[in-house]
Length: 127
Image (cartoon, rainbow, N blue to C red; front, side):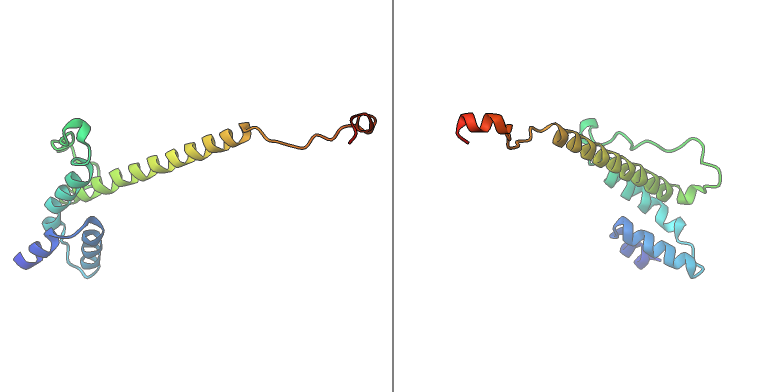
């Protein structure tokens, strides 16, 4: 128990997720041990990075009502994954907007081309 807690305490989110899923498949539910670790991971990932709000904007977000079908012992993992999905979707939207703006800018660029004078004007200009 204590050794497992020490090991899990040092895990990143992806490793914590893998260990939790693997042990759940083996018939052991670690969510009662990992909930506080997910809370810590959530705060490190999404709160400390946001210095505009003093880094503590989401620290006190204990929900007053748990979502339907969500046990309180797995809520922080679910919340972490939901927030991560939101950030990934926002990143994709930003990339798409950037690509659209880049294409728009490319279409507005001045394009040089050779001017071919009509045959009757070429003889007068010596070309």
